[in-house]
Image 1 (tube, rainbow, N blue to C red):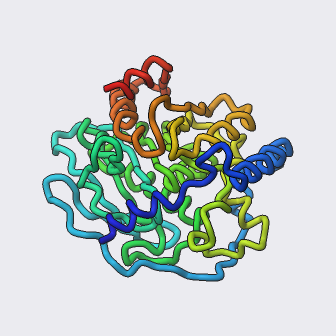
Image 2 (cartoon, rainbow, N blue to C red):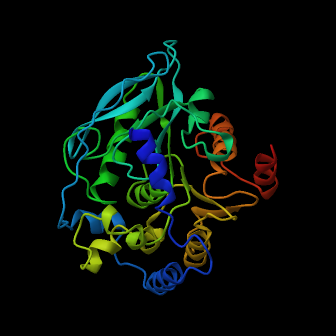
Length: 323
């Protein structure tokens, strides 16, 4: 049941998916104007000084489903909200340290469904390409999800949970603590971008189809006081692109349905060389996931130097989408 809710949620959470969408366009223009006023403090510094006001306290009381023991185990990681559950892929007990990746799915991403069930190539949201390539993969529930402690905050405290999941991974015997990556799709892509703006502890970040302003997600996904512009700003990554120091790659398909308008708008706003905004030809918000996660997985396997060494060429994107 959780998986069905997650997948359906993706289709209702696209913001500004058409270039002619008036609301999306107005949000983008407002964000571009705001981006010219560079914040005096980083997002991490601003978040530390801020206390959110929640008008609702949504929670999911359904625990994680039992995974196939050959593929995943359920673990619990310590976050500011308490001990939160997660799926962690099973790695060989051979003493080797491997790259690892945290994946945040779309929809209401506080809870995690059975991510071991890959979808069709045109809409595979499981990110199983990483696990299949031998990359340790973690799918964390975030505060208020899967019968865990805390309550959903809508793109704020959840960022701290993602960073805490990274710290948990770094302590695992099978994981190379210097090669921990973060990826996410749709709302998960927005979360990944906010995490990149809040922390430099990931080796690289891959954000698929994020938005720059979370207002368009709708009130049902925003449990805080939306009349307070500061609440909204601290959750909207377009305002904090200058805070990113980690290599960060933002992908979106050019064909409907898509959030390509936000990718283009944030590309115009940003002067930060740490971020690359990459439209993917021939794909949409969903169909780029299968080929691009396979491409990124191979890049991660070869990223074994002392510093990250990532490049994505137009030819590589075209080749991945043509397979």
